[in-house]
Length: 272
Image (cartoon, rainbow, N blue to C red; front, side, top):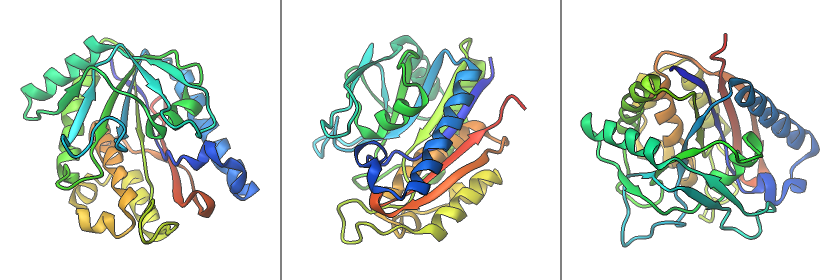
């Protein structure tokens, strides 16, 4: 069954933890855009959500850093942050579905790590809070290392997406794919609060034009110049690989200074 829904959305913790700090017009635009994404997901009636997200030292540390990790748990508890201003939830998983995806990757030149225990932080819980607030659709998380070098390069993330896309299109379930993270931000670093709007708009343009060559050609250095946290866009590049020639629609972008992040949303209008 073809993928029935796909989108990309930023996951800055301030979106829920300090919402009131944002300018009212920006908060309204971000909230409305999340609602548009949620409506699209609900209308598509997915039976599984593949969540392309980031690790924030919640599950792994420097004693073991894998490039990409597939979650294979029965459920995932989150958020780990008590200050995120959302109640703890138990998000359902589907170990058999995750294993199928993992085995497909192993058969096609990719060997991600995998974990049968995993917790969710803001990187997963913020988008799920807005997109599927009932937390009633099983989630298959795929975590990208964006913290410690070496990392999976953008070209490899794109290739992983292309391999995953073939598996997802052939799956019997109705699949939604959600990429989360970014955009430009430099959390806790010397340029904390810096937002590179020019980088963000150029990246979103490459996404909306379906320019896979440009997305795969990004380097760590180019992305890091827009802030260390900007590496979370590896998940978006993987999404582009999954979706192939299909182009997303720009939904919104706001450089929200109090959240220290460029907040971007894209959606794929697959019904059309």
